[in-house]
Amino acid sequence: MFIIKSDDCYGLLDMEQHTAYIKNERISIPLNSVFEPGDTIKLRSKTFVILNPDPQFFYRISGRRTQTILPVDAAYIIYTGSINGSKKILESGVGTGNLSYSILNSINASGKLVSVDIDKQNIENARKNVYSLINPNNWELINGDIKTFKTEELFDTIILDMPEPWECVDNLKNNLKFGGYFITYSPTFNQAEKNVLSLNKNNFTVLETVELIKRNILVRENATRPDNNIIGHTAFITIAVKLNVL
Ligand SMILES: C[S@@+](CC[C@H](N)C(=O)[O-])C[C@H]1O[C@@H](n2cnc3c(N)ncnc32)[C@H](O)[C@@H]1O
Image (cartoon, rainbow, N blue to C red; front, side, top):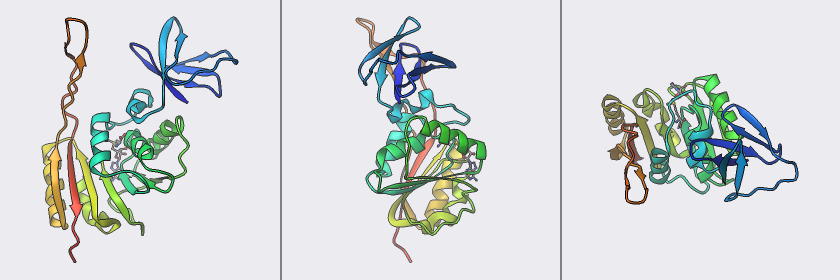
């Protein structure tokens, strides 16, 4: 599956089915055509560039039922949470699956992502979104409440993007390795404050709480300037490390 992008929209190109999907439209592609990333294709009189199905495009084509983590925040979480190689990651909630997709693209086949969400429909929607692009065999999707979730597994990193992360720290702390990262993603100051207080109380050291602001620049000859459409606030990211304290 490829992503396709024109000046004003994104879509999907399925070379196995010889079909392009743009918004709600299905467009048949000639059976003998061959396309690769970097090629262009003309559909309904628009030119589309063919792109790899990379995480930065996921939110553009995924069916969305919840707020979702956008690339600037996802990239920072992947980097500061040291999500790579054969790491074992726990996340909740799954929402639209944007962070799940970024994580699955960052770990290898020996790594593992366990994703927990209380809402069955969100799970099914995220599964559909992710499986429309890749077929991961290292992704466990669980329908459950992360506040009471029990597992014997030990994780390298835990990420919580749900309403009350501070209520989950005590329940999950024994499932994180010493030196592992506990990351919370919360839109309000009150939530961020509760997250930090709870992490401090549970033998974590908080490295930082940040808000990332991205400013896009419209580049045109002799008229380069910031874009009018600014994504202002998204959420506060808190990154903490589990201390080896008995
Ligand atoms: C903002 S969305 C997560 C977005 C996701 N990180 C993404 O990138 O698309 C919040 C999710 O948390 C889930 N949720 C809320 N309370 C929960 C709980 N107690 N346990 C597990 N999931 C929960 C919701 O069903 C929803 O799917």
